[in-house]
Amino acid sequence: MRPPASAATAPRFDSSPLAPDFLPTHLRRAAIYRLRNRPEDAAAKLLTVIDLYQARGEPQQAVQVYPALIDLQPADVHLRTRFATLLLDQGRRPAAVAQYLALADMLFQIGQPEHALEELRRVRGLDPPNPEVRLPPGPYLLRLDRVAEALVEFSRALHLDADNL
Image 1 (cartoon, rainbow, N blue to C red):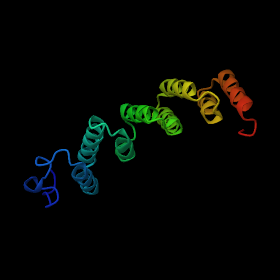
Image 2: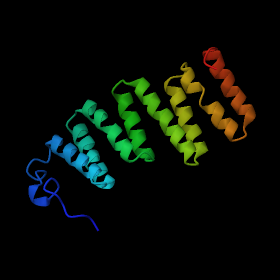
Image 3: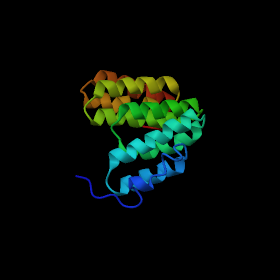
Image 4: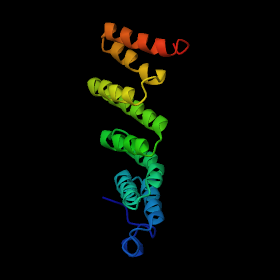
């Protein structure tokens, strides 16, 4: 059972129906929901804001909201993929690469190593000469006891940046 609503979240004080596209209201409500330990409601508000920013043609604003949403739902693969794709669309390749690497790490941690390796192959296509992209498959493959494949990955990373290892 939910606690009684405060004035900030009570339906009679809800300004959303009066100005559904006034996004600071939604952001403020998401913050309130988060403080009141209602992460699902906070995530729904943040996703609404992201979708509205994108519908308005303001993807750079959506990029600023995604980290808060990912903080609420860190294991949501679809959400992380959408964020990385948006970053790529905005020409922010290094940030997109970082998101894909974080996604691969999260997938490996939750027991989906093959999916993690697939994401690493995808990110390798985005930035082939980047040794930070070439290095992660090695340790993952070692932990899967695929030593020969790991050595190949380490060798590739070493050729790109001998000082990295």
